[in-house]
Image (cartoon, rainbow, N blue to C red):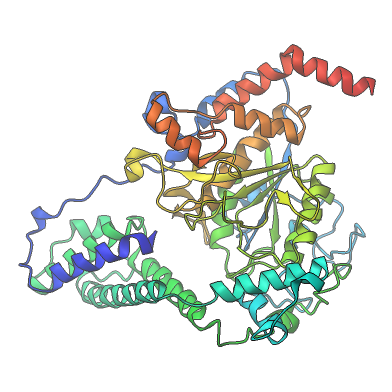
Length: 547
């Protein structure tokens, strides 16, 4: 979202810092603070397009059945296992004795008490940052294909796929002029923020002040007033969560600039052999799978902790299994495939996958794992991505369709991000991928409040937030209606989406996803009960039992 707002932001900064007159404080207008936890609210009672979670919980509590606890495996970048919101609901491997350095359950993973880390070494080291997959693909096969005439007709199917991947990577690895200009805007914006926050620190005597504190603060003079105006304008235009402290915002901007600068250098810079130095597995050998360590937190757990908090349920029905397989950068196919298999083999019935990439050189491994999960009746929830891609024409991975298997997995739900007029002015976000042939449904994903490391909470945006909200609902359905299969839970979630009555809005949403609607927990649990009582359900189960 930063890139979509940055040019407007830069214009405003020029007005404020350049020839424009100093504005009085009363002239600055700020939108109302976004309501915390809007994603759980109800349209009828709160006038917000949330998922009606309280209504769903009230209905489920009235049922005479006792829920069966359900494990959600969160495949992500790490979870803060000490967070007071998440810790009570972590999955525990009862067959494993903690910290005895013995593989008690003989599954190949030593002391995997709460999950497993596929991005670590047996000596306790952990991978943090990795290059993009396009950089890995480009440099891995550059010597084979660059400036050479390739007879694709004579290539084997796998070699042809490899060559096509390299061509795509070579086409995309160039850092465009637009990307370079956007990076420059962000650098300049960060530098200006650095300057004004330094001024404000001296006056406020708080290195991590937020918007609320700054709005209430009365500057000593013109310099402080100008710094206050620039800071508040910046935060508003960037759409940054106003509850975040100045130090946190600058840290995020620095991280963003650093990642983009690395992308700028990817074509010329051969990726460092980080995996071979830390993980030390034979990556090309899929049977070499017992690597890693049990540190599911890792060095950077903000994203995964936020996701895990959304997937968690305080009614003690859901357990969170942590699987660390997503670095800062693109994930490896082997880690994802093994992460899915680990989750399935250890009892997860829902797997949340808030990650994705444009290249999947070992796609067969992941496709096979997805179908292994389908055979074991496990539902996978995958975020659609945040690049504003039309997924009808642009592929991201993991993908339910496999050209290797020649089918589409029926146990995968692909989720786009929705918003609300009170949050962003409409039902759509300005970042979510879409496409009604691939994306199944929408779920709240804009300024979503959840847990962050060190017992903190905050807002993040992205389809990464949308997916665990769907995982949360799916797990509730599987807990209270365990007779439903993964395929049936997917059907229930899709058929029970909230859809708009307005014809123009309905047409727009139908271009975003198959259902043309937003997931709704209350509708889903009611529909699940009705479906189980329906003649069509009983008939299908009777036929299945007869066969």
